[in-house]
Length: 140
Image: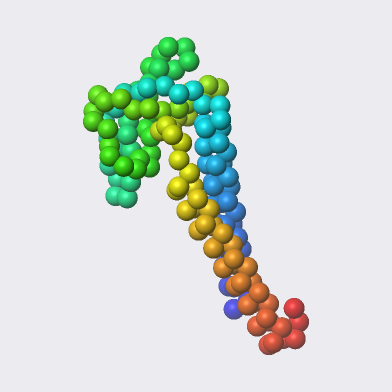
C-alpha cells in the first residue's frame, strides 16, 4: 500500500511540475508578446474548429516583408470571416510566435487557479498520509 501511495504521489508531483512549467512558459510568452510584440494587421485564411476550441489561420507580414502563416489557437468570441482583417502581434526575434491582439490573460488565470488548487490538494493529501502514518506506525 505504501509503495502504491508513493508512486501516486510521485506521479502527481511530476504532473504538477509539468503543468507549472507549461503555465510559466505560456505566461512568459504572453508577457513578451504584450511588451515587445510588433502589432500588425493579418488576414484570416480560415478556421480550425476543435471539440472544445476554435482557432483562426492567419497570414501576416513579417519583419522582412515576407508573408508568414500561423494558427491562433484558443480563439474567443466571433470568428473573423475568411479574407477579413485580424489584429495580431508577433515577436520580432521569433516572428512565427504570434497571438491575437490584444493579448488576453483570462485562460492563463483560470489555468493558474487550477494549478493552485491542485497544489493545495496535493499538499493536503501529503499531510493526510503523514498523519495516518504517524497514527498507525508512530513515525512521521
